[in-house]
Image (tube, rainbow, N blue to C red; front, side, top):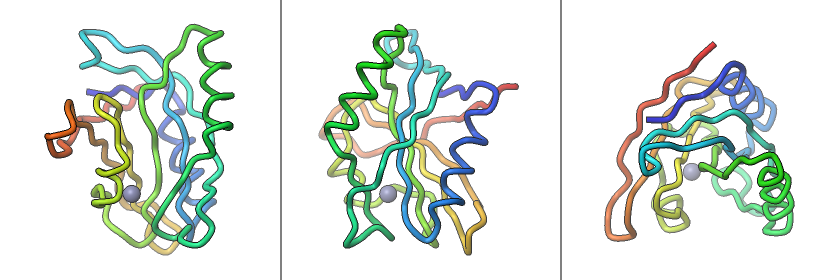
Length: 142
Ligand SMILES: [Zn+2]
């Protein structure tokens, strides 16, 4: 289960709408409990999608930008819990590419955006590389 505090869901949706028709991406930061099974997201950080050739259906994060954001979070005692990205004119289901690029135990929030308006927000995770994605419940607080 992943809990999104106060305005986190709004921030993710706003970024997804603004980036349309391109994919947006960002980091989910916060704390986890119960061996990582319960995640509480208290911050999101926008990342630049550096995949320009296929910005409509792929995203790539600059590792330097990621490292910088991670350091800033660690200073405040937060961990990276996962990532969010948008699917312009596609369902909020992870693609094969998403699975290949995913890391175990992180949460992957996907926002479907149709014609510039969000239609669905889902979250996905997997425990080990030989497992498929399974859906994770999202609880929005505040
Ligand atoms: Zn995707």
